Every structure is written in structure tokens, then in C-alpha cells.
Image (cartoon, rainbow, N blue to C red; front, side, top):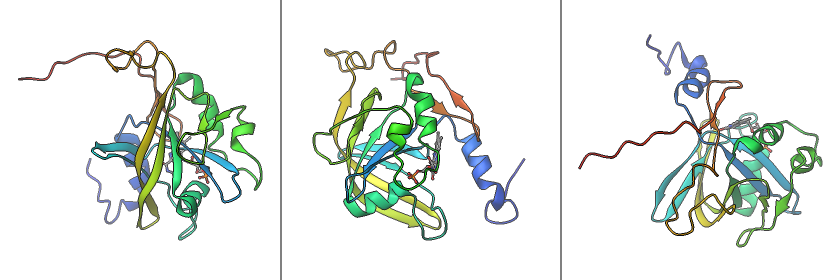
Length: 200
Ligand SMILES: Cc1cc2nc3c(=O)[nH]c(=O)nc-3n(C[C@H](O)[C@H](O)[C@H](O)COP(=O)(O)O)c2cc1C
């Protein structure tokens, strides 16, 4: 099958891309508004893009043309955010934080989550998350109704056990991130891993 995303099939772009470009990691982003109220929401249009400097990006679509989601709005105003990573134990709570809530209702409380103060940025990290990346906004690109938030990573926090303290390699028994698969509700586990040495 072939699809013309510039023309007749453009209305299928989200379904096709979100279903085919998988598995995707999930950025579970905490931000704070000017009054310090904490917001949490998941974004699977997300990845890291380099280490010198350490850079990541994720993409909140606009609610309506020109109207950003709360996450993007808070970052535009404060320039700070935390990307928490999601493992199986956090999956259900992560999903709950994608709900659209009335103004003033906290996703963190609603999902039964807790927060821990960050070291370098105002938004806290999610205590239940196995890994958290404290970030500062580098730039936000506006591409049609997509915003691409590009951030530099200032601090990494990992739960004890996630990394081997000697080698700093991930301990696969202690870190099981989930991946986003087909829309609207597909996910994958990452416990079935294999190794493939690179050719010389
Ligand atoms: C697993 C998962 C991944 C998601 N990925 C995205 C994404 O990449 N971009 C996006 O705009 N919305 C995404 N969403 C929907 C947002 O989480 C949802 O719109 C949320 O209410 C936004 O919250 P906010 O307005 O507080 O920023 C995703 C939802 C789930 C459950």
C-alpha cells in the first residue's frame, strides 16, 4: 500500500504514523505554571537526539490551531520541565494523567502519584517514575499544529537498582520501560530482549 500524506491520505497521517513508527518511548512530562501548580501529561512523539549537549525533544499537538496544550503553555512561560520515564508499574497512572481535567484539578493527585523536588528546575519529578530528566527549554518549533519542544537535559535521576553503579549500564531486571504501539491504546513491554554485537 502507498499513501500520499501531502494529498488524498493526509487525514490518515496520525493513524498511520502513530501505528507504524513504533515502539515509541513515552515522555511523562511534569511542568509548573507561574503559580507553581504542577501539571503532568504523557507524550510519545518523543526521543533523545544527542549527548553533546544532551538534547531531547517531544511534540505536543495544539488543542486547537494556535492554542497549546497546558504542557507546552507552561514550558513557554517558565522554560523548564521534567521528562519522567514510564515503566510497567507506572503505566496505569501515566494513562490517567492523559485525561482532560477541569481547571484546578491536579493530574498528580487524581492518579494517586507523588512528587519529589527537582534539583535544578522548579517542576518536580514524579516519585514513582524509575527515571527522571530535568530539562530546560532550548527552543520550541511551531510546525503547523505541532509544537516540537527541544530541551537540554541538566540532571538525570534513576531509582536505585536501575543502573549498575560500577558500569552505569542499565540493569534489565530493574528497568522495564513500556513502549507506545498502535493507536489508540496499544503498548508493549520490553522484558524480552536480545543482544546483537555490532560488526567490526
Ligand atoms: C501514551 C500516550 C502518549 C501521548 N502522546 C502524545 C503526543 O505525543 N502528543 C500529544 O499532543 N498528545 C499526546 N498524548 C495525549 C496527551 O497526553 C493529552 O492530550 C494530555 O491531556 C495533554 O495534557 P496537557 O494539556 O496537560 O499538556 C498522549 C497520550 C498518551 C496516553
